[in-house]
Structures are given as C-alpha cells and as structure tokens.
Length: 58
Image 1 (spheres, one colour):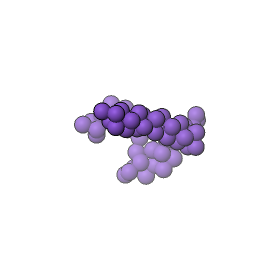
Image 2 (cartoon, one colour):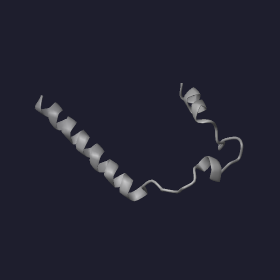
Image 3 (cartoon, rainbow, N blue to C red):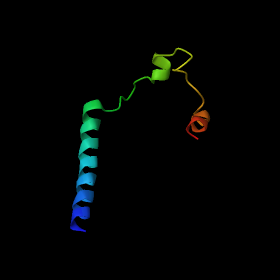
C-alpha cells in the first residue's frame, strides 16, 4: 500500500509540475488566431460550427 501511495503522489506531482512547465514554455496566446483561419485550405483546416465539433468526437 505504501508503494501505491508513493506512486500516486509522484504521478500527481509530476502532472502538476509538468503542466506548469509546459504552460510557462508554450503558454496560450491571448490574441493568437486559430489554425483553421491562418492555414485555411478548405480540406484539413476549415472552421466549422461549434456544435459540429461534438459530432466529430462522438
């Protein structure tokens, strides 16, 4: 049980630390344009209605 608890704690700490590092290095752009608008080619990059995204996921 001790091994499981240590593994769980290390996974959670790794998740939090890695998430903070990735957010700091790559960070979200406040006014960055989405690729569907910057690389629009009507095949792979195409803006669609928000409700259609869920159809693709399911």
